[in-house]
Length: 137
Image (cartoon, rainbow, N blue to C red; front, top):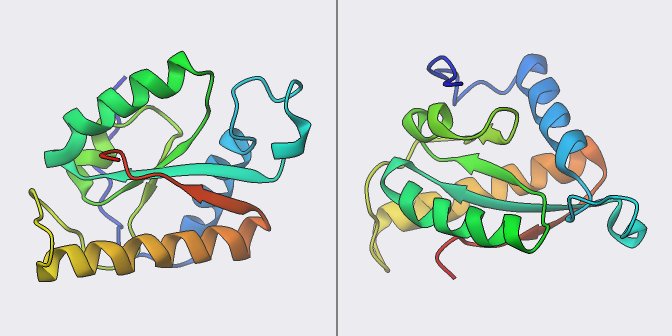
């Protein structure tokens, strides 16, 4: 089912922390089969996408499912957040980045800073390690 528009991408309070913790706790462990790979019990696989990159993310998601992976997604804009699987999206911390971004652009710099901010917040809140995979790699 489609979720309501997520409009608190800049919110950094307790409610957003609880949402992050919920997503992390649901997907931590890298593999969907948590029992088979206990060595990854405290590791979160994380990627990111905005609406323009959703087709790339959907391909990444397809292959990740095929390989038995489990993950969370940083939503770089509200439109992407609304189209992600339930309980998989984490709203970007900082400025939303929309559209395709090219190497060396200021938007790509913002995107990178946003990703690091979310990764650090996840690590601090949930005491987990993070493996980050860009969906277009």
